[in-house]
Image 1 (cartoon, rainbow, N blue to C red):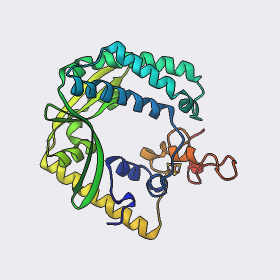
Image 2: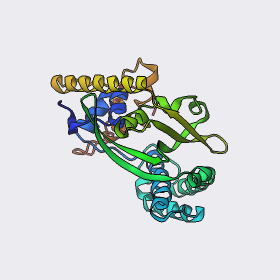
Image 3: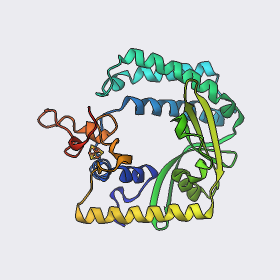
Image 4: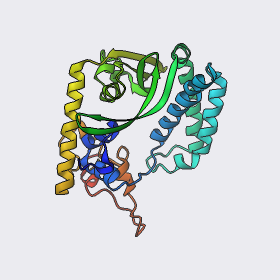
Length: 281
Ligand code: SF4
């Protein structure tokens, strides 16, 4: 199977589906994109909760104190300030941004406390390599706790996007890891972002039908990618597609911002496809 890197992952498949051009730049050319403040912050929230609290609990038998977690988070955010300042889409001073985020993180750890303290973690950030219907897959599973696979341990959702019944069972990433581990109990731990963040733990069981559906999806995407690798044809986002057009903008596409500057000439340029975007920058 001729796949770039030799395998697929839940996130590379999501990238392929959002924009084939973006997939080409990231997964075939291996380009690194300009940092997004929102993404870097999310990664930090995620890491501190997973490794510094749940991972710590595996190693030491108890959770860390909230104040300790808060200090770790603050120190890590201080460290990445230069990176956060590089995001060309943000104008808020980085000092102010970090202060707000630290306060927000304090609320998150308070709201997630019952989940964090009630759960018995077995493994965090587990790397899995396996096949789905003949397609090699590599992925990182957030947490296995009490025989349940949990991913997106700290996923910010707007109120309207969250709380859909049965979301956990339908989530492709979770179904993928259910196939990889053989465990079928899955859950999402989401922080619902409204005036006051609240935690929404959505549990479900992966059914054989869902496994079949996801297997077919991987096979379909692997075939499409093989064809694109053969023909060299990678499609940019179709701006007529309202579900996707928003992705194609300076703010939301890492690829757009990555070639906002030509690294050879230093001139400001933009994605040849992104320029067609209707989104005002
Ligand atoms: S700017 Fe648009 S077409 Fe270009 S990579 Fe990003 S989403 Fe795709």
